[in-house]
Structures are given as C-alpha cells and as structure tokens.
Length: 136
Image 1 (cartoon, rainbow, N blue to C red):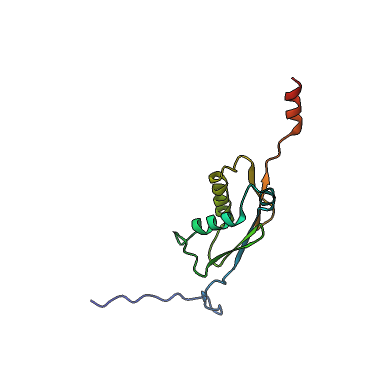
Image 2: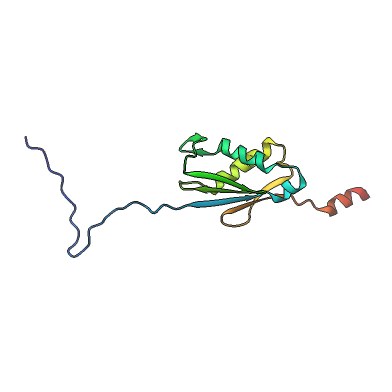
C-alpha cells in the first residue's frame, strides 16, 4: 500500500507565499527607584540587588541569568535589562516580597511611576486624623 503524500498549501493566484521568520529580539528595561528609603537609611540598595539576583527566575530556574538578564545598580536605582520575556508585574512581586522579608511592607509601597519604572514610596498618613485623636 503506497504512503499518502502531504498536500502542499496553494495560495491564491498572484499572492506571495507566506514566509515565517524569526521574531525581532526586543530588549526590556525596567527600573526600580528606591531613593527615598535608601536616603533615610531604612533600606540597603546593595542588599536589594543581591535579593533580586538570588530570586529572579529565567526559564524556571533561579540564578540562570546567562546573557539574557542583567541587573545594574546606580546609587539607589536598580535597572533590570532582559533579552527574554520578563514581566514588570513579576518585578513588583519580588519587590513586595523583599519588603515583607525586611519588615518594610507596613511603611513602603511599590508604585508604578511610568511604563517601565517602579518607585518605592511611603504610605500617606493623614496628619489630621492623628490631631483629632489627641484632642479627644
């Protein structure tokens, strides 16, 4: 019994054949600005950098950066550069995890200040509420 031959797809007359190529590599840049807590001395930027290096997963494995992901620190700003898929939300998750580990989660929050940046800011506490409680 002869084997069946696979039929080739036929394009419409005059249409160019569809050629699938490789996708263009895109480089993702994310920054985390922790200048306020670092200046106040409640957080260490170098410690945060090592935390991210230990925890960031690439292809399901930690410490698997290779040439795909790099972390740079300039004073109190961390810049994460990635050649592979890397979500900004994952970076927020890891930042919140670091704050919780160091008991800073009650005072600091992670706020998106731009499309590719996060800021660590203090919670806004209303001074009026504190004054009203003192008067009672």
